[in-house]
Length: 226
Image (tube, rainbow, N blue to C red):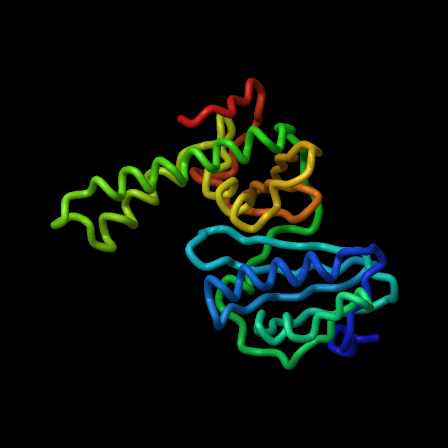
């Protein structure tokens, strides 16, 4: 089977189709014309996206019940319409012209774990940062309350590191907004070359490392807002 022949993906685990639908619903809610890149092979499928308002790449992966090879960019809304939760499957819509981000995805392998953090702690940090943004945005003088001032405030807050790691808070923010910070299993932080990644059972968020490909060691990780 070639990389363009699969027209349906069938998942091996219960709930995968529903999880994919929830992921796509959030993407479309934020950006009606959102696109996603689907890659399938070696028994696994991944759906990559760049959620609007978040400078990160998000991905949901799932094991496949039936072999499939695929690498295509499609409209998120069209993919959502083809999810069949009862059959644990999703049809593959017609390809679209991919956005620039779709051409530069995180590496498949070579990831090294450098920290594990309680999921509740990461969620608390993300929620606190969201609260700070809202409070400070409300206090901006009227003459400075335009988009430029709000963008600058967002950049200041979401560029901060998560504790003593190089992972920016924007990754935790995105994971929180996408519904990835659930359950009780810890959040795993990984690095590979210029990329950093936050991984949970419900999805991953990847960002390019700031300031080069130095170490992302997470010893002494603090989960209090900084």
